[in-house]
Structure formats: C-alpha cells, structure tokens
Image (cartoon, rainbow over the protein chains, first blue to last red):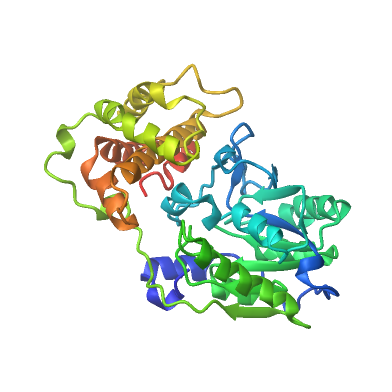
Length: 160
Length: 232
C-alpha cells in the first residue's frame, strides 16, 4: 500500500482507525536450517478458493472467519476470488494470479532448489476482518495444526 | 495476515508476511514482515512480471535469516501510488446512457473467449454459477434489481446463497467479464483506463452504479450491505 501520507484524508483515516490488534512482543520460531531444506506453505487472506468450492460471504456477522483449502498443485485457472473489501483493485489478479497468490513463483523457487519442498495444501482466508477473534482462537490454530501435521516449516502469508 | 502469522508462529511454524499497511504491521508485530508500497490488489508488485515478483519473494524470504524479531523491513521500490477511481469519480461519456448492457455482453463475448484461450482458461468469472453465455439473463436480473424490484430473482441462485449475496456475485462476475474482455481487446490498457472505460463508457458500469444507488436507499440493512463496494 502506498504510504498513508500519500493517500486522501478519507483513505488515510479509514486505515488509521481500522481496529487492528496491538502487541508489545512477538512470538518467534528460530529457523535452524536454510530455506532450501524447508517445506513451505502459502496462506493468503485474499478470499481465494477453488472454482467449485463455497465462495466467501458477507452474510456472517463480524466477517467471514472460515478458510478454504487450495492444493499447491492446483491449476491457476481453477482459483477464483470472492473477497468483499472495496479497497483493492481487482485488475491485478485478473491479469495474473501470482500477484496475490504466487503459486507459479513458488514452484519455480522449488524447482531451482531455493525452497526445499512445497506443502500439499495451501490455505485461504478472508482478510479485512474487523473482528479476528475466531481466526485467532479457532480457524487459525486449526490450519496451523494441519500444516504441522504435514511437516510445514515456513509459511509465506500474502494479503490482497 | 499479521494476526495469522502470530498464530502460526505460536504453533511452531516460522512465518514471513507481506504487509500492505506498514502502520498496521508495526502495531500487530508479526514475527517477520516485508512492507511493500504497492496498491491493494498488487501484493507482489507488477502482474505478469515474474522477475519483479521474484525480487519481492527473495526480499521476503531473506527475513528468515534474522535471529530475533519482530522484523519489519521495507521493499525498496519507487512505484508511484496507483489510484483506483470509483464510479462516482468518473465522468460518463455522452453515449453511455443510450447503450444496452445486454448488447454489450454479446459484443464482448468474442474478446472474453479469446482471453480464455490466451490465458489457459484462467478467468475471475465464476462466482454466481451462471455461464457467461447466459449473462444477458444476469443483466435482466440486475436491471430489475436496479429499479427496486425486490421480487426479482433467478432460478439459478444456489440454495444457501442469499439474494443480496447473489446480487454481489453476479456483479463481481459481470465486472470480471467486462475487464477481461477489455484487456484482451486493448492489451496495453492500464488500470486507470480500464476503470474509466467501465464506469464512464459502458452500460454495465451505469447499471452497477444505479444498482448500488437503489440498494443504498433500501430500508433493508442486508440489501444496503450488498451495495457496499459494488460501484468501485
């Protein structure tokens, strides 16, 4: 996103007053081996899903806190987006899925040996949630357990 | 995204987050975040530019070498901010009101299908479940909704999808159909010209703007909610 000072007052105030959580510290996992030896997963908050999967919806009070599973060997033509934020430009992802969900780029990095391996499954959430408590306490830990069970060591998170 | 990074890290998985709002990342403190100065919708920078996207990824993964956090670094890029005009900011051309959205759909179909052929079938169309060759019916449905006909509906609306939600899916599919057809027709068109064409020159753009205005006047808060973001 362009720096806040470059935006209109309305855009700037909307982002400044977005109810994001504030922390004093951060959890930390020390990575004891190079990326070329790690299994990597991709998680996005871009509201993506497979074409025949259930789209995300605005009907859930407080926001959609569920997630969708997208196989890492998916055909990019099978992935669509049902994100409800009004603040982003769809033309980028119309042109190239990788600008939000870099499936091809990660495959290239794996093929070049920069990444050890890719997880079988990637995951997609809905971003811009005003109440993230269900994601923090339920669906986020659920996905973390699924990735742990698959041996994932590094997660790349992308927004839209 | 940043809150998910914290959750995953708490479960023992190292994370790298691409952050679009630096100020939010500074508050939430994900373990490792790369701030990118691109407009929302362009997290990895330029579409169809693999080398540029690889630079972003290399910068993100480089943060894994840090020994303590939180780490918040900026991706060096001098891209100027993209501005995404919304319907109300675009002047309509003199012919827009005379055009037919149904006829536009028919006229754009060949370009849309060529887009599919040239992109391996990749398309953002596909939320409402109605094939694009039947989008004239979607147009008639949305036109009825825009006149305030609260009984207007489509047999194709899936069970479990509310009518307001279905309206949103139809509009998102229609926009994607138009933009992809236009990008095929004018392959050098930039984002700004695409938005100005849709909102200022097409009957569909006017239809969506009219629909948003009608829904916004509804006494039903769910319908008003469906209007949120339609016209941009």
